[in-house]
Image (cartoon, rainbow, N blue to C red; front, side, top):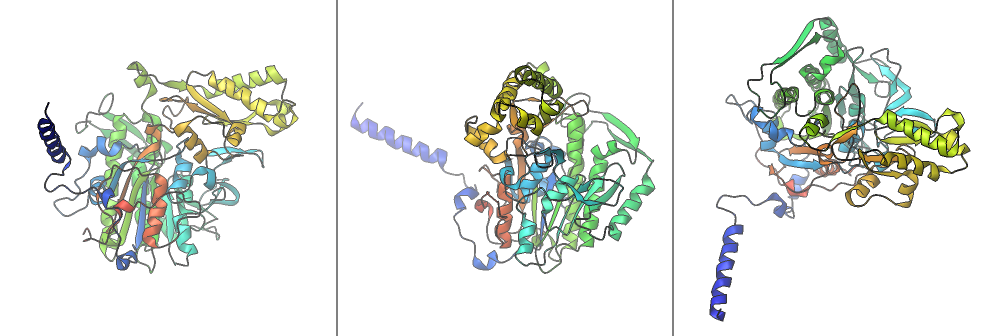
Length: 566
């Protein structure tokens, strides 16, 4: 080949490359390439009147794409706003936001969203743990000094175990008269989003079937009138027949089994909280709280965080591939639509006064039995049997334990040694941990395991697992031995056949949408972590990020104010 021929070939290759990589006419430049553009100083000080954080408990990253054809349009013919489609079309949408933690679950997830902090700093690695100081099993929001207000429950709760602070705390610490209100059916969801200085955290007592709070927020130990009115309405409906059914005719076809279903119970039964009724109750309380506190109508930025817990209740029973889950997601879409339209009518400037965040606290894997039937590796781990084998192994090697048991606590593949047994053993803690680890690794469904001693010495599984462990592990609260299941393996639960407890994509990846007048709308493929939410909101409100925040400001989505959505 001659030199002239080579030159012609090179020129042709150059033109081909330019053709392939030049955007077509009308195509927009990816927002990430504009991330260095400065924001005008004047617009930087135009803070939102209200930050709304909507969390859907156990909402996988793919629910928005799988069921999108069932959602309301972004805008109806009558001008009404839709739900999920409106937020996705008008906001910055990260389809695969991530939790960088080893075990994804409700308590840690909600504690991360508005703190921007990983569990190793904010202190909540699990929903519950064995406390070395009190030598008792401890629920993550347990606090005997702050009793429940609104029911006869003997459990006291507060954010006592949460270390650090949240966006709402920072607004108040900066001196702003901001109001911070959070609510969910689950107490831990509401409490952790509010931090230490929330004006009110509200949740649902499923046994009493009424909304309650804690003396931590209500020191006078009396519910406000608007909550009592909500509860009176619930009491009047108790015992009435309640039905949830679908004929399946509008199904996307992406779910398993019969598309049609019917469930019946009585109003007031716990079971109904895992149906769309739980969404309706949450929506009704959210609208009441919005009006009672006149959120978004004060002199400073307010924070209103709402978590829809029913999605998780249903997911544990029926899983992500059930027709019930599709219908639940559709019901949430309608509820969010009603909430957005109510919000638009109440705020002085409509939605231009609001900054809205949509995300989740974790996902969930598909049915292991269904996967196994399709020759996909999957299965269950019997936690009780595994603990029994560990006890037997330790007794065989080291004799009978002081106090009668070697292990004081086990949950979510965390095992904590009984302090009395560990202290009296001549073998030493590290040797006891090593034996527990060895038994764990003999379980077919477990891929890795590490001990508290190995964590202290940084002798951990490599790569992503090491980062997840370091982000998650809290000495004295996490187990003395922690196991990591193989993908699509989870613990066996008689009542909850579906469980989330890993750092695999199906548990750690969730959607993230941020919508507001200063947000560049579009779909973003760039990596976003859930811990990025708090520093981004802090930037937009002009306050410091929460004390233990490790996230980044999502600068690629920020811009000068644009014409508001009306």
